[in-house]
Length: 117
Ligand SMILES: CC(C)(COP(=O)(O)OP(=O)(O)OC[C@H]1O[C@@H](n2cnc3c(N)ncnc32)[C@H](O)[C@@H]1OP(=O)(O)O)[C@@H](O)C(=O)NCCC(=O)NCCS
Image (cartoon, rainbow, N blue to C red):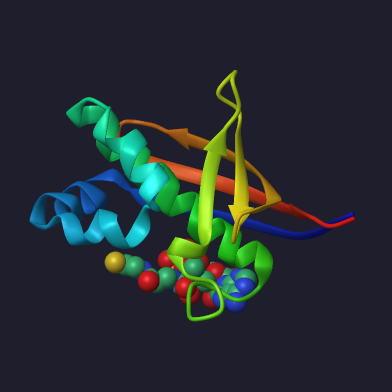
């Protein structure tokens, strides 16, 4: 059963600026697993990737109904891809959400659906 839906869009310029300022921003947003993925990307893809994960996590927090905060931090949410590249959302290591991520020249956006049995 679908129990939540969330959508988010972010400006790549904002994420590029925050990421260039300090590694602290991406360390706050990305889990260790996601940081390893980030480290392997080109400069242009790094911004898209970070912006897409940021959007996916905000979208998840909306689908959950809590927003980002103590009950749902960026570190609680992880996006993992299957062998074909399809992403899913994990909350505290449990697969919880369906997610779709997109980027254009200026924006990244994500939509999340939370499914419970
Ligand atoms: C819920 C949250 C994700 C909204 O994100 P935002 O970027 O502030 O705002 P957006 O424009 O993307 O979304 C706003 C909409 O979210 C929805 N929303 C707000 N709280 C919500 C909640 N608890 N559950 C679901 N949806 C919620 C509302 O519909 C709101 O629009 P409205 O006020 O016109 O009705 C936000 O409260 C939050 O937790 N932000 C994280 C802040 C943060 O740590 N940022 C890091 C920056 S370095």
